[in-house]
Length: 255
Ligand code: PEP
Image (tube, rainbow, N blue to C red):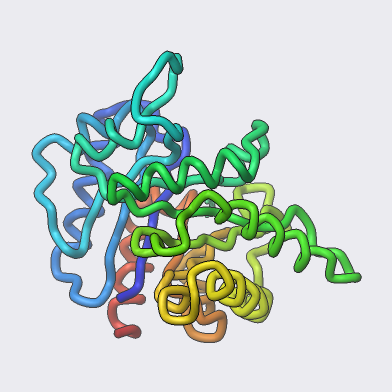
């Protein structure tokens, strides 16, 4: 099974548009057998989008962030218990755009651990700001991941995914998408860290996704040469045509 996760970020502007895009994505996921589509919508829309959404094995709704407690005096926050009560199954944690607002590895780890207690799959994002010639980015991603896993119990890997998202490759200001080779060296590093934390069997089961300027032309390389288990897609996930094309391609080529 390959995972195609859409991160809508702070788009679209209205619930009406959100419903229309979601309906189109649902339609393109209808006949999937080998691919799972997850749409992570803005927090304010997830309740309305979840209402009446039938659970299927190939399509799910998720959120883009979550707090690390189930309830409390936390103005503006959303808890894992609240997301789970809507029937959501996925939540992104530690996206670089949230880390840029000051989120720490410890907070990311607490968020992931608490979400996983509610059987929400935490899509935990890591990635370096730049690639330096000396290869310091390896150490940086390793320690970021190590610290972001710290609060997750060693026997609790079932509801976890890691998304490797190099910041230099994300968004409309990206330098370029990563090359599959850039990803491949990182999947090896990430896998090692997962095995060190969860042990060999469980560590190998955690899916590793790639995110950063994925489109219809480059998607395939990340899954084959890059050995990713899925993709985290920002901008293109707002386009039913572009996103649908990636989903079809992945479904055709992968088991
Ligand atoms: C993202 O925001 O997670 C992302 C990968 O964005 P984009 O696909 O637009 O680069």
